[in-house]
Length: 443
Image 1 (cartoon, rainbow, N blue to C red):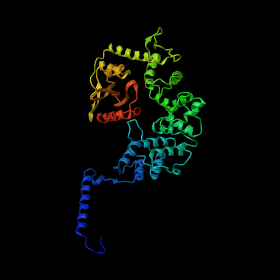
Image 2 (cartoon, one colour):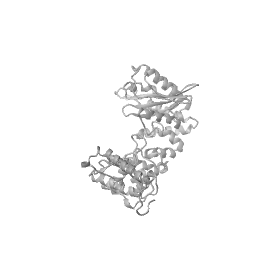
Image 3 (cartoon, rainbow, N blue to C red):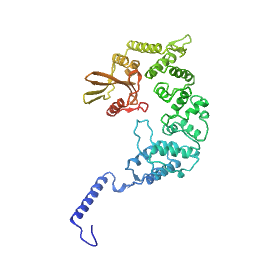
Image 4 (cartoon, helix red, strand yellow):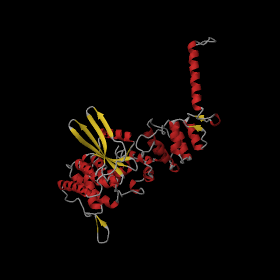
């Protein structure tokens, strides 16, 4: 420490020289990119950056990731309401500019705020009166949305409305917040009874608005949350066609009446029923395609007999596909996985022949054998995740990749079982190495 006019020590002089040299090097790095005559001002103040972004003057060097993210996402949505929201949330230290960490279809907190701003004319409270109750961004935005639009209780699962860009679900949020019953909301996919609407409001927070409708229906019929979650893994999770929905409810009753039926069979049974009752099979006298069993019903069905019919259908799919002219097809060009841990080898490889595709379906007890035509047309590619150790090779998952969207759309184990967390570890590893996105439905 120096007092008065004492001379600087050699150590301090050396430190100052180093700092000066560092500043000069930084200036030399910036100069070629930003010549003096167009040099702009670097700003770390997020509020000032937002002001500049909405003003459109573009006087700032948006070097920080957060500022760049705000500028790219806001785009043409530069309304006064959104500006007020963003400035107030910055003041409340809400980190809404963070990047999303899911697949490309996932929405970020900034997207949610943009959607919230579109209804600001319906707000029942002032933006500036809100105070953040939490350091967690998701909880803060949930609380903020209720501050703006929630006069009455709104269940947590409705928060998805602001992230999924569905104006229908957003209007349901406002409708419930105003104190109205969900039964009177516009564009409900199916009508709800009073009890179904009651259980709808009690759905778990991770289900989302559409799944909450299915939850309300099934719980009203005597089902529980575990049963609902099994149904949500099948093809009819969000199929709300009014006519089919009546029939689906009879299937739910049948499943609940047979509690010893392994839930792993639900998906394959529903695939079979859909094929028999709704998929066109032959022409009638009027020239219309009609299904095999348009009058298919669940009354009097025996579980063992039905499972035998499902197995027979799977075998028939294999036989039909052998007659198709798709013996083999070119690989899509994506990288597979070859990962060794101790004495275990994990591989993900593409299936490129019809024979192997049928064999995959036979061993995994699902209907992937029906995908030969789509693979040959290069619409999708089918991959097999296998684990090899000193006991042999075990098939773990069959994966479907959309070649057009570059997304893993399905990942199913034996009997259409959903993948476990340990299975998904290696699927995610492969997706990163191959540059493929994961659908949010299988994460």
